[in-house]
Length: 150
Image 1 (tube, rainbow, N blue to C red):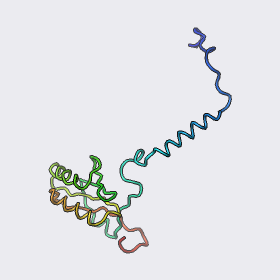
Image 2: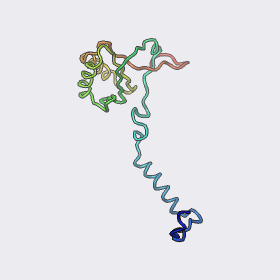
Image 3: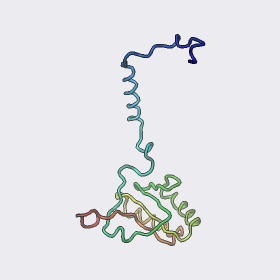
Image 4: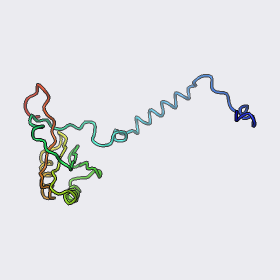
């Protein structure tokens, strides 16, 4: 063995016989730090946990293929592939994307809590920026046994 020529094995501490209280204290401290300083965005970046699309009975029939997608989890916060933007920064981003990709439509994935006024404002920005394919609104189909639009 490698330790025999230098007699290093005699200088090692013996392994502990049982788990002492310090082991459990360290484990609890680590778990506490994760609970206190952890964020739901650290392990799962992107949309928040409570993000839900609106539901409509005609959601699947009206779907169209889009190449540019933005997500709106709450008012004045837009998630794009480049990062987070507010509404004032969104116009420049839309203009840049419409120059790169001509004739495409924009898919807006807005949470239910986002006011319709904000969605119409974004649709107007997209048409001004040059999205000639229009603006699609992402929706979930109604589940069985439910009627009407929520």
